[in-house]
Amino acid sequence: MYFAVISIFPEMFASIRDFGITGRASAQGQVTIDCINPRDYTADNYRRIDERPYGGGPGMVMMAEPLAQAIDDARGRATQHGCRIDAAHCPVIYMSPQGQTLSENSVLEMSDYDGMIILCGRYEGIDERLLMHYVDSEVSIGDYVLTGGELPAMVLMDSVIRRLPDTMGDDQSAIQDSFVDGLLDCPHYTKPHEYAGMSVPDVLLSGHHANIAKWRFGQQVARTQARRPDLWQAFTPNAQQAKWLKALAKSDSNSH
Ligand code: SAM
Image 1 (cartoon, rainbow, N blue to C red):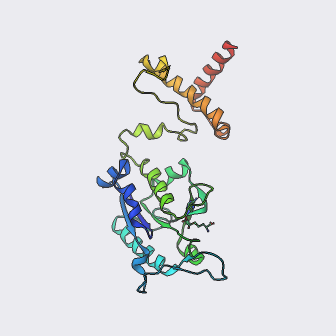
Image 2 (cartoon, rainbow, N blue to C red):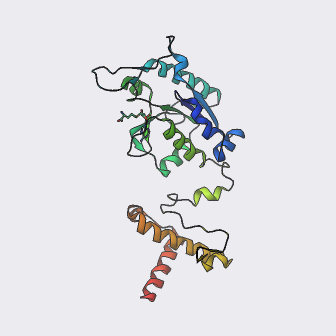
Image 3 (cartoon, rainbow, N blue to C red):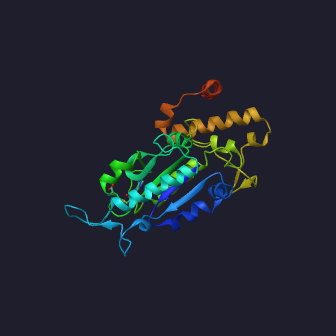
């Protein structure tokens, strides 16, 4: 998958390109992360990409022209990487607190793209006309405001890269995580067997895979009900989960 990130701080992206699972995906060529600095597309000696806002007010606004050229260049590079340049295959995404909030469902949809061109804002944001002319969608990472779009862009890329086939050591681990089947994940334990006066639940030592799966599902249900009633309300069990839910309800009523 191809990523072009347009940012005035390209060095920040070393942390996603060089470390961990995303670093390995980049080193093995499963993903390409190209950083494009809009300052390279300015006409003046100061490499200026921001100006004061029309109408007055505090702060600066990123100018349309250097960003437009950076996007055009990114599209050229994306084409060379085999991307189809349209909103469905290689969209231009603006990281913005005003965008659609990122979710595991939207991440999964985006993992089907050929690539994406990600715009990182700074200051008060970007000239609206550039957004209207070039941007296919705006993505937010939550209802709070950061100083720039670089961290949100890395959040987006990290979450998409881990859903690509073969980027995780074990593909099962991505599909067992929170939100994937509509529930939160179950608790996890490792060595030692005893820690701080607490021991690992017996069922996890039993080697009985069906009982372990059922126990884990019960934990997922209890956590989701307690922590995220909104998710629980929207949850639709599959056939196996419906059976487990029946069994859990039965053992609950027996214990009362
Ligand atoms: N004036 C803008 C507003 O209130 O909507 C906020 C600008 S913010 C200080 C600078 C840049 O940070 C934005 O252009 C955007 O790229 C990025 N940013 C800030 N918060 C974000 C969030 N929650 N999600 C995605 N991007 C964000």
